[in-house]
Length: 303
Image 1: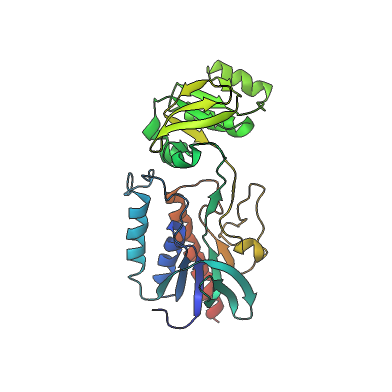
Image 2: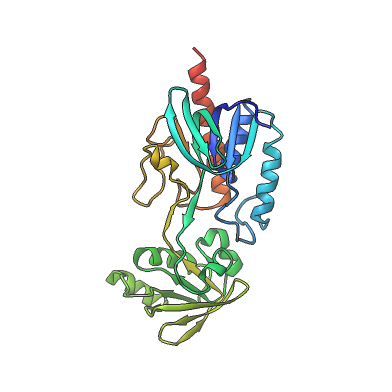
């Protein structure tokens, strides 16, 4: 039960970053509301890695335990709903939800994550987060020494190749179009015996999300066990932009060293602000953001 609709801080997004921020604020006795729609971007990922004490745990289990622990703090409130809009007013920030509620917070934390733009390749969506992956730090160890592909082009593909080549000697880059590598990059790829295939991709063949191979438009096939894919993304919510928050060239919400956006009183943390997409990074950023928001609230009050 939520008593009243005015809070020290409203957190939009109740996954790892949002819950971590809520814990930091709750431990400082701040009246906090977390609004979450229940659609984390890693909901299809079977296991989370590279997070000390939680390595190999399922994302759902980590999130469930986090929420249980955060909700033990009596000044933290949680609302399962979709926040679809926010406006700045004299009291702070008014947030509107799909169910028709309106809540006001002195400060606003946007922890809404990002949304991947899945390409229209048969089998891609079913494998995404399982064996079609984005991050060698999150998933690479589980596929080390196996036949691996990189679905990307130019600088993105070259960067991934430099990281993944440390995990496997059997690596192929698939550009699905004309390669855009520099002459120097091509020389270095050839030196590492990393072939570049530019044929279009018709289908990712798989069994229950586990990649078995790729069928190309020309009818040829190659067997793989894992595919790193550098795909575009958009912000999962347009609330930050609607408030006037600036984005970086890459599409992340621009924040300073204190997780403050370009709009006064609005903070952001998690995948929506950083190219390093991991549970551990989201938790760290959320914890820091909660501390920074509490610091500002305390300074405003301590007059």
